[in-house]
Image (cartoon, rainbow, N blue to C red; front, top):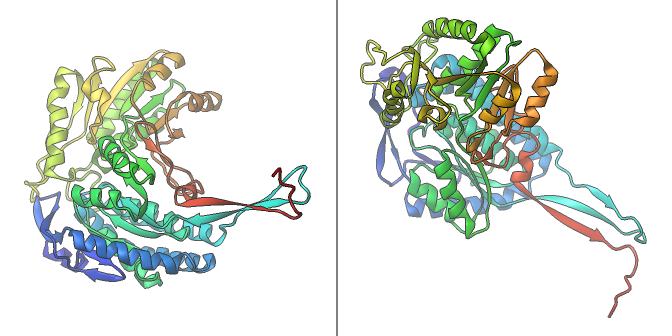
Length: 492
């Protein structure tokens, strides 16, 4: 681990423009590839939470009055700083999450910088609207978009830096102050984001990082000075956040779990569809909320599809996450491994095993959280592996006969985060987009999330959308102003 010491932050929190060691309980941060702790992180105390809230209040008063063009310049500089440190931060993200460096080098830091850059442009162009009234004697109105105050972001552990940017960038663009609570399993890259914001010239107190577990998150969610909460996490956690925010009538955005369908029709390009299915199940070792883990393949191409899927799955490179040839790293933690392993152990009783990658033995990484990809054909749509979110590389494969059948089966879930369709018939592709009950959908691709497009789920997969201009509505409020141009005749 000594080779990576230069990457590690030397503090735990970022409060009021300062990196703080923290007085709370120290918790080990563990490298998922070998199970070894490589740094200790202090969890926030109640006094540090209050200190951060006070700093954010001061920062908000400065930032909300900062001209939008100046906000844009700060955000743009922060994005460029992240890009300049891409390789360094990518390695830190791999160390924290266990994800293959092949992924973090091209996705995690880049997508965070893309988000901040996009919202820098939005910040510079934020305006209200003129409204004319019919029948009024010259009266008119206008709207003003105002910041909310102090916003809280609770990030997930699978894309720590990306989530931190997706939440903080629109909040800062709108003039809010922001407090980020990273996932306890992946605390490090948030401090690199804080470093970039500080170097870019963000005023002290506007962006803060507090580390901690559920207790810290709950204390922040229910705090009377928090105006808005954005969570990426499990559906059960989302329910708790809603309850915690209810008394304060806080704005809430929730991006939660999924069990998304991927529908492959018999006219699809099979090689492309196989690639899409693998991306939707094995990327990031299956730890992606929008993954298309229920793969519905038309019966006419089932055998061809399965043959190619298995052959390409067998060729996946599993190993040292820091080796750029590696395509799959370990699961994020020993606890999560036990959960996923439980699904793997029960899978043979729930259907036919088409491929089982087992538990890989990686030399030098014997104590890591390793698990191989698996492909099963469940007995029916109601088996646990076909209904519950595994959050690991276990693909459930089904066959179907026609569009009506697959639509009904695809929608038969409490989740509605994502859905995808592969077909050469674009009329059918667009028609399926109207029929599938999901917030984030793809035609002839999967899990592509450009910052310009909104991302979020329906049903129990969440509330609200992140990214795109739609995110601005989540971090601002509209004030309506009516301007009377002539005396009004009152009825009293």
